[in-house]
Length: 206
Length: 206
DNA sequence: AATAGAATGGACTGCACGGTCCACCGGAAG
DNA sequence: CTTCCGGTGGACCGTGCAGTCCATTCTATT
Image (tube, rainbow over all chains, first blue to last red; front, side, top):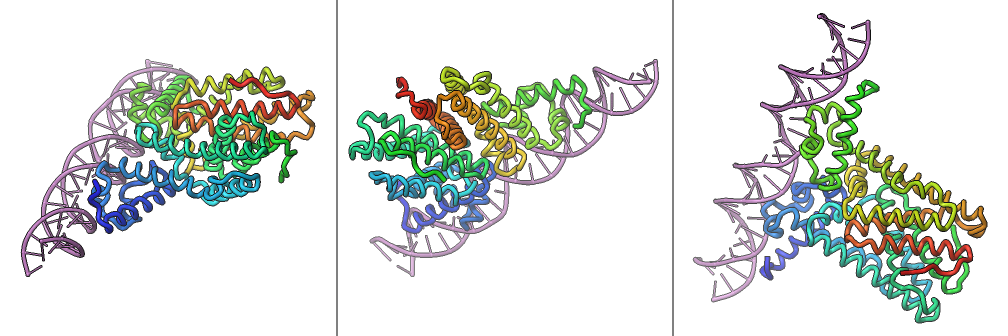
């Protein structure tokens, strides 16, 4: 498992990772078995261990990385360009839509709690994801501040951290209850409090 | 498992639930085995199945209920009396302390995602917990509003939902990363935005 | 004291699932 | 055409763990 992968090999590996990700979302980390992955991806046990010598943990880690990348990608292009309130609104809509569609499937949440606990590798993936996510939000807040739409002394990092926490919690609750109201509340409240800071009065509330 | 439990029986059952809760916190739902519980609670397999005829799932459900009750209890008496900004501050401190002490042990989070997915019983426990929690927050906001410390048109339920989401997310992140900054940010930002609504200027920020 | 039913101990079973091994295939390079 | 090596198939193994069963010991009620 060094650079020694042919085109075919890389394709197979990718197929396994994607299939495994689907299986994990459907069955949950605890319930998913290697045989489920084999069935889903039409691969044999030797292939799994060929591409993931460390066995199940190894595969899980690869899936976690895959899903983590996906999370931020799904929020583009908006997350990368939060330089107008309109962009913020579009981003908000994207996040809400993405997680509502996902329903109660849990791409990363369970991976965090199940794998992430023990292994340092998984924890690193989560930390990295959260860091990049929060940094994008902070960047957006700075952009609005620099454009004069937020006061100069706005506490960028705390705002970004609080917003991120709200999203995470909203998603957790969506996963547990199937209701997206909390996610929406966190986003709407977070953004409208921000706008209020900039002097804009209350936002429409449905 | 109807009313047919002697005093001794009830004590044993409680001992098992508490011990199982500890084991689950330490090892995680996926890793914990019935034998761990047996060892921890000095009980035999027949006892486990005697008190929890449905086996592991049954036990897990009982633990979930136990932990859920604990969560709100640990926030008392403050959570029940959020009728001054001082009370809000004390409550905030309690929450932060509780989860920081708990560290990355995960009393309910993993139970949600692991058991909660499939079984309707677990989901009901979570929904009930969240509902009671949010209702307490809403009650506190109403108290402040009625005391004239918040505008009359404050959107109580959305505020409460957003705050709850922030807490949940903060705790999730604490569990995944070991950092309590997000939990603090969510609480501090949520409460200070509320106070600002009431006309109080910015709050101290460390 | 007798008896019924709860409480307990722990051996035993069955099997699901992760992981190992070896034999065979296929295509690219010489 | 041969050779080599990555890719693939799938039988096989060991074990860890949930769940079953029955024998034995308590406890309460009469």
